[in-house]
Structures are given as C-alpha cells and as structure tokens.
Length: 124
Image (cartoon, rainbow, N blue to C red; front, side, top):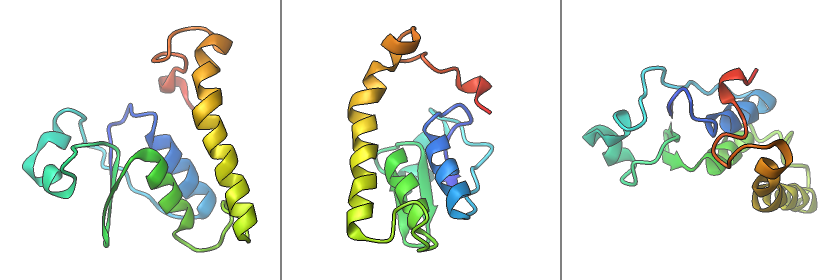
C-alpha cells in the first residue's frame, strides 16, 4: 500500500517505476497529507511522518526515490537497472546527475518558481 496524497508529485516516481517493472502498486485514495500521516497508526509505521511511504511485508519504506528503486527491483527482472553491476551504476549515475544538477535548473529553463515549475494537475 502506497500512503501518499493525490497531489504529491513524488508519487509518480513509484508509479512510473511500477508500470515499467510490471509491479502493481496501490495508492491509498483516502490518504491526506497533514492528516493521515499524523495519526498514531501511521507514526508507528513511520515515526518521521513522511509521505509518500510504501508499506511492505518487510516493513515501511519512505522517500520517493527509495520507493521507486525498491519497486523497480521487486520482480528481479533488471528491466530498469541493467544486467550487470556496471550497467546498474551507470543508471544510478544518471539518476543522481538529474536529481542533483538538472532539477535545480528547471525553474530557470521553463520559468516559474522551484515550487510551481510543473503543473502536476495536468500530468497525463
């Protein structure tokens, strides 16, 4: 179960990874950030109160990148992570590059502030 708000852009990372990997991830439709993640039940699973959070049989996983990576590895088919350690590290290298360097430039490239440079309500 994926605990996240409907407007949380970071949820798309896990959902896209799941789609490519052929894994079913079910977001909780009634989850409300600021409400659901403050409940005692949620805080017992995730004391940080962070969303998104993926509940797994082994335990909870929070942080959207960690969730996406976990989902990408679930079937063990290496479709998203290559077939060798070198391929895996090259993929990780480019993920880190985009996160650390390119995403900072997006407001400048497309206009707007860091918080509103993409309208997630129109995301397909």
